Amino acid sequence: MDFSRFNIMGVALSTRTYMIAPISYAMGDIRTGKLRALGVTTKKRSSLLPEVPTIAEAGVPGFDYPIWYGVWVPAGTPAAVVDKLAKDIARVLAAPELRAWLEEHGADRMSMTQPEFARFVLEESESAKRVVKAAGAKP
Image 1 (cartoon, rainbow, N blue to C red):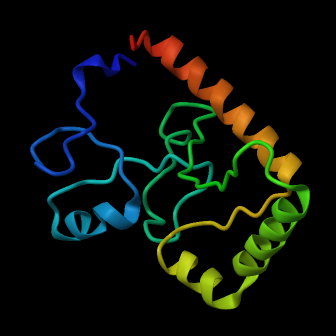
Image 2 (spheres, rainbow, N blue to C red):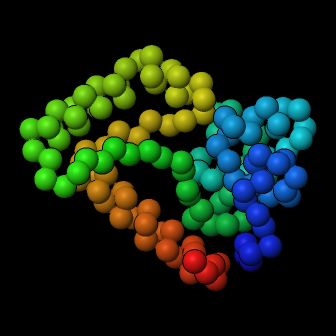
């Protein structure tokens, strides 16, 4: 797909023909009919928009680009600090209140060990490089 003709930064102006945005940000405009959801970027349908297909279902096999957040610390941070931070984050992510809030906002909890997260970030980076190259995008 030639993405050069699309401006995905049209969220503020609401004058663009195409955008990728978190569902929670776009939901108001979807409900009022200002936006029409064509697909979700994750490998499974959103609980907030179950009638909207995934991009993979819509014809782009393997498309899976969830919005995710991670926590990093500076190199050289003591292992004891990193371990405590990881345990605290895992505890918070397991809290029923946060799980309910994430579900209400259409988000999936992605709790990983440090090695799992490192692999995930590398895989996401490699996948993004392939997409950029295939699209012919220039920096």
